[in-house]
View 1: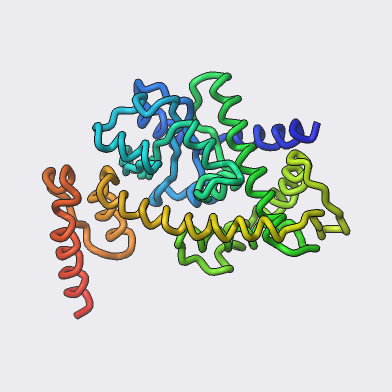
View 2 (view 1 turned 135 degrees about the vertical axis):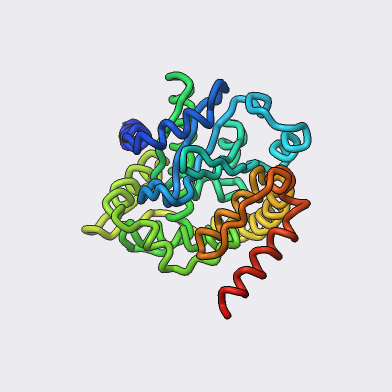
Length: 304
């Protein structure tokens, strides 16, 4: 019964309509391919910005279901996800690829990779899905992320606290594992205008996970003994930092469309329009030093 309540909550989020331009964008990205589904999350979901960058995760049954070179497919198997940059009809996106099995493995409490469950306990939309069975499998994966995140929040914080404080404390910890530079204020920004969502979600997730808690008005106190879990978290955090360093290094060699992404980021932050040549677009790693030099010299000239 408690899992059903959590599922109803998540189904409402996953199926909530998004801007039709994004639906058309995702359909164009998918084309004739048949992934399980496409998840939309991140800052572009919280506030639509046609000039910004949208984040999509494409979930696959098998890595062979999406065209990639053999080296890229190997990289995706060993250290997922692979990410590529897409521009179409004035919209831009980072598109991450991984199988549902890879997603599920990284949504469990014992995973050393926090990036999946920390992202997908946040609001998410299922903007493309293959069929009803795929939708059910993806719902179960998102449920796992939420329950894992809520469980870690309970074991890493100290109550009584409001739901917002439990969540923000968790996100501050996952930022550290992911080597992100966000301040504690960023965790509060993440939940801005969504406080009611996180307040409703936390007790649903705790009940679904069989985790007892006391409530005193808005303050919640999970009935857990956190010492052992905190030691386990310390090990996960150490390994997770090394994993994220490895992922950053891999991205330097496998981020498809990386040159176009770099050019867009420079323009977005007030720099010049680099206007990539076809060769530069096809060979971003080879041309990266030249692209950075072009951006540097023009930016310096603007300061004079």
